Length: 494
Image (cartoon, rainbow, N blue to C red; front, side, top):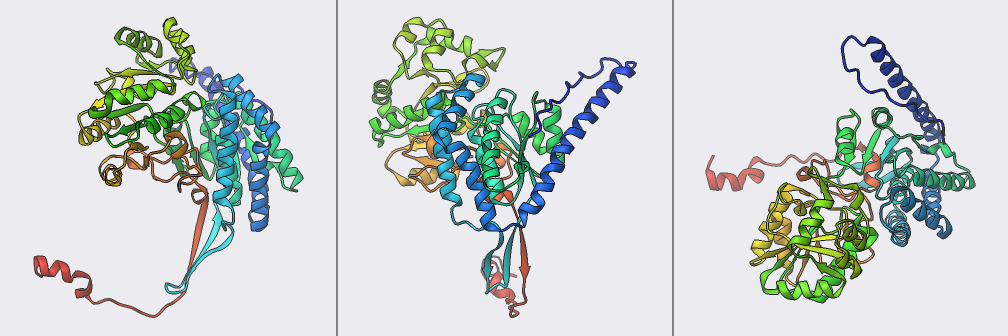
């Protein structure tokens, strides 16, 4: 790993006459480009031999990267460093996330062919051959500074690629430690550490942008500004949409079960996950009973004045304040001056809301153990409320449903702008794959065109592969026009 820091990038010139400043900025930009190019060249050299080494070698590399984060003592170091340096989440939950997300990914990858012939269709005469994409630029967030890079690195190596990580500035130290562990495991496996590299500190937008331009593929998780930068980099890119998950609780729901699952999801790692519920929309018939159930699992409902105090500390000039992000509920209550609430040691805070949009900030993503509560007349009204919430923020991601009617889940899937409907599960665990559902394990969820993304899957190994198809000749089969247009002719005539 190249530890040499990139130089600072000069601010843009304030006047057209400051030619010296412009020249300095150009020189610094060229230096950043050159330093990134050196990383990419090393990655390319390592990847050329690796790509042709065979499935066993690819599997060995992916396993090495997985064990680097799963081994308990290293996992604990990574979790502690992540919380210390980012100030986000809590150590025990990050430890659990690092292990379970990686274990689940290994389950999904186990036995999967990602080298050579991966499929044959003799009827169509098609043979599919897996090919690596090359050098992957992995853009990762501060909320999961070890788990997300590990997930991307494992997928990239499984498919015969090299990877260069661009971590968030806050997450740089945890990512660097992760790569130290991965390099040690790669050396044990007889593989080049240059297969996995990262941008050195200080992490700058200029260096991240240069990496995006020079890589063969960008996979971007984190801020929407990074995702947009990935899409405009000129390099093929997969990015994720904004989170702002809502869950609906219907009159048929097991309220105790729903409250327990919502609480687990809302509080895990202090709600760093984009899949953590931000709102719960409750049918009126069970509204009061559901609030009681949420109180029973540690929720504290704020009154109107307490809600105003919380809003003032959570949003400054219309923007979510960093000092509340991914902090424990008692800490947030103290920051808001709600000492009585903090003294109750709440697991999460609740506020009632009826409005949606910028004038009602609690209707948006909060990245903290704060849950917004809406009352709906019935299921149709609940679905309409969620649709309006997502029109403001969170379109494409997912929706939760607690109830006993499977048809309602299908209705949501057919009508809401979501890529996933999560039924009777703790949302933040289920959306990114869990051992009790069939979704693939991932920390990056595509949100489709609703969320300005080009895919709706959980980001997985298939996004890290090219596939070449060999087409052999088959028997000619030309259909008659009436076979294909007969129904149309019968309805509309010729």
